[in-house]
Amino acid sequence: MNKASGEKNICGVSIGVLALESYFPKPPGHIKNPSSLPFTTCYEILRGISVPDLLYRPTPAMENTILEAALSLEMQGVKAITGSCGFLALYQSVLVNTVQIPVFASSLIQVPLAYQMTGQKVGVITADATVLNSHYLKAVSADHVPVAIAGLQDSEEFASVILHNERNNMDLELVLEELLTVVRELLENNPDIGALVLECTDLPPYAHRLQAEFGLPIFDLTTLACMANDVVQRQPYKGFT
Image (cartoon, rainbow, N blue to C red; front, side, top):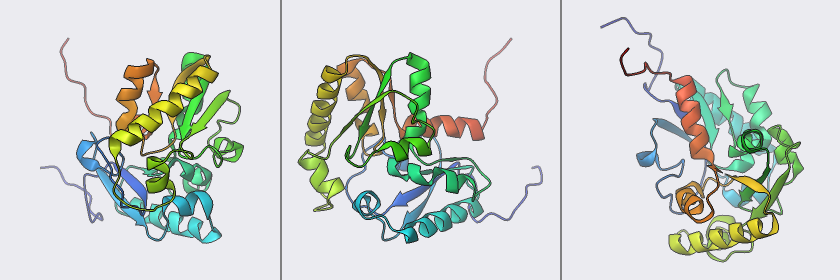
């Protein structure tokens, strides 16, 4: 066996996740469900920061908590860092300037990519469209892209569980129906949309159903994390000449 460098408490971890504190279900495809992910993960829980805290009650102290968690992940030896909520986009720049490893804080980073790939307006599906403004898009250099944004803030099941933290149990099929309704209305009002980007990390479990229904390219945090893993953990190709 070759000599290996030490200094790591845990080895073999690819992606570190800045994880909001939440206790609702995380089906396969969610970044906080490592059983379904094709890469290894390590989590730093942002204690005291829930989804509604981040969206509706942000404080200056949150930045310190997020940066300390990122530094901890870096010390643990992860190869890249992401987050469990697309609204962490606001911290993309400060995170990149704090750690020495790649950071992709939000799936919104893919908005310019989706536009370049299709040449058409990008549909952004978010947890709350009343919160997702130009500041979040500018934070990931997506403010120049033509977008149409729709959110689940007026839904019943999704909003009560994830946005308002009223309970932890959730009807996943009902959330799917709410999501399909929101996307259907968005596309009816914007027939020039060429791709969808799911801001919310709770939506990738439904991405395949969205694509089956609407036939569009679907970008989300899981697609981004898979690409990041491939970038930071290059493997030899199998094959022959």
